[in-house]
Image 1 (cartoon, rainbow, N blue to C red):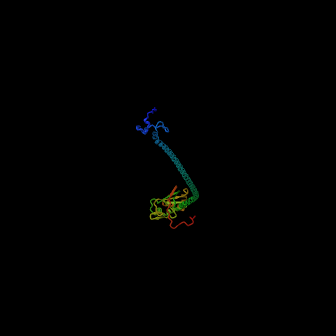
Image 2: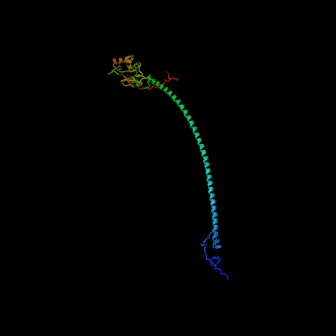
Image 3: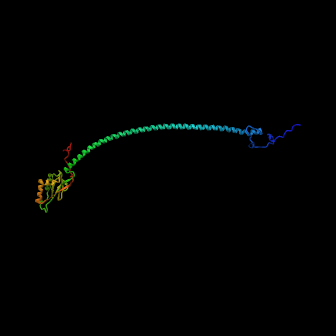
Length: 296
């Protein structure tokens, strides 16, 4: 009797018409390299695409990693080259700036030296001019003093000082010309004061100079061609202590004492410690200073 074969499992027949339909995703995936109880066809179907995809994915991932590494290295190299280039450019620029700065410093020092030389030269010239000016000031002071003295003597410069003031006028209730002050009477008075030592004289504010004329013009007396009004005030600067007495001792003074005592003309002489006399305006038409000097 032949042995009885065990009944066949319908699931074990891969080609059987009655194999139930299962999706690939629902088929359990055995461990790689082990077929176990799964059929060969199911194993191939389950592992063929997945393993290829895994290997391709692993190969692609490794390639991408290598490419990424190369890119990083390339970027780093480019960065190093850029930094080195920039550093080189900065070094060249810094060297040029230092050279330019050194040139500017040298130029400024040279300019400072030139200006200092100019200052020293101008300082020397200033000292020389100050010395010359000091001498000119002394000379000018002496010249001004001499001109002032000459102007005072000539009557063209205003002066002040002690002296006497003589006031003369007609006799009271004068009826004749002799009882009035004449131009000749004023001339006698002025000449007597000159003789007594007067240094400057004025009549009613009119300064007496070498060109002054005392004249009778009708009923009026003129000095420097200006009419005078009575009374006639004669101011004389000189030694106040002796000027009056010395005048009275002169023939001109004696004449005036006679006019006062005999005719009654007014004659008053007083001493004044401070008299001011104006300068006269004198125009020289023909006279001039000789060339080569001012004279003695």
